[in-house]
Length: 168
Ligand code: NI
Image: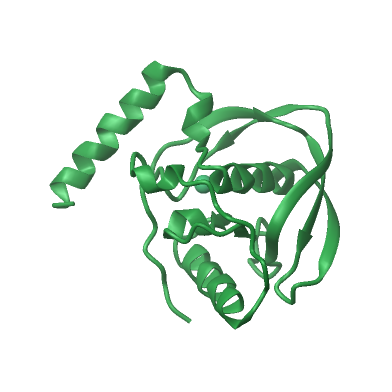
């Protein structure tokens, strides 16, 4: 397994709309494993392939504290949503910033797992938030898009400054 480089806002590649996975072959399984290792190593709760500059509809997450319950969603689609709730979100592509975002409180999702099998999942609370956040990534959308232009631009300039200092 290997650790993948994570793109950071405002990198334009994060705006790429990911393509459906036509077949869950060994390359996709390796991608899933690398994404999980990358996510755990970065201490994140979720990661979308887009963030690793792989524009495929693959996302992984693990919101359990013990970090022993990975979920992999390939070609995810939301079937049903219920309610709405606001919670603080962060993102490995927007390091160091946490802001409140409103999302559906409860969702029902259909996806393929790491073995390419179709399954449905009911999620609420943090897992529901995480799934919606990762599915946004697959559409080229970031949580900062839900913020005011003022807040988004402030985050953008702060990160650009850090990237500049890092020589990127
Ligand atoms: Ni994110």
